[in-house]
Amino acid sequence: MSENILEVRDLQASYGQVDVLRGVALEVKTGEVCVILGANGAGKTTTLRSICNMPIVASTGTITFAGEDISNTDTGGIVAQGMAHVPQGRGTFPELSTLENLQLGAYVRKDNEVDDDIDRWFQMFPVLKERKDQAAGSLSGGEQQMLAVSRALMSRPKLLLLDEPSLGLAPIIIEDLFATFKQINQDEGTTMLIVEQNANLALSIAQSAYVLETGSIALSGPAAQLRDDPAVQEAYLGA
Figure (cartoon, rainbow, N blue to C red):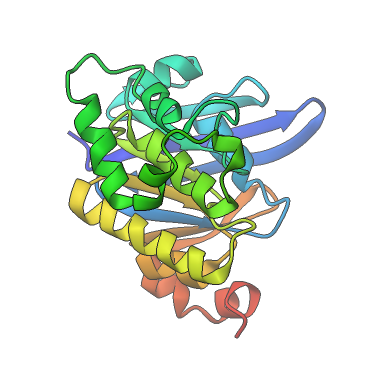
């Protein structure tokens, strides 16, 4: 069995007549945190959308997940196979309560441990327990991000895709959130592919990284190596 939980080959993607991705190739090892860096418009969000075959983007290429070719599998089928996606902008169901959002996250499961997992994420994010009967749309930005992540984890994914999780959050909330990602990765073994603008923080918890420029992979390697790369430091780390 491959040590890679995800392999992407020659990924091309477009919105209508606008080409966004041009032959993207990447690998994510089982159990690691992998980061995709890049400027606005580089194609980072489109990469995640294409990996889980969201219908709003037209894409071609080969995507292998947990040893299976999912290139032609619909999004629902990909979720059922163990991939979860936290989209940019939180993506909670605002009219539903915090608890109902978590319960909805477990809809693909057939086991009897859903309540145990809800308790687990309430322990990880105590504020969500305090707000369990509150409508998700009334939560703060940081609380909604905690809920979006917890809801995705309720499916017990093999791979968690996170699209700009720090967007719009206060610095102290961002630091706490990334510390939690690191803890979840270490404690649960959940593999993560994170698209993030906060390069310093993202690279600090990652094992591998890719830099995307105008729809193509410009750099890749161990996260520590990219942190020391002068070009990356100048473009993304404020050096």
